[in-house]
Length: 112
Image 1: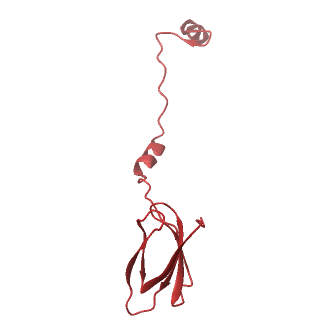
Image 2: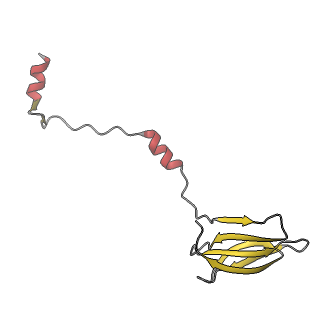
């Protein structure tokens, strides 16, 4: 009997006009995860070498144009201050270092 009722409503696997297609079930967990994730923030890669010595080297990328740079910094106390390094490629502030003075800054290929 059930088979006959189904045959009346369906013809060759097609949905008749009295049947509406079912909406797909929503995955609430995925929707909640997407809503909770914050927008990605720009980041800056940096690597400090010889940090236990008075003169250390800092490998980094420019915050704006991602040009690879290396700076040598004298960080001996007592007068340590914030120094803004200008990128030679885009002429914007590439990074702010805390040191006594910056001895040199050179462009390199990005190590990342």
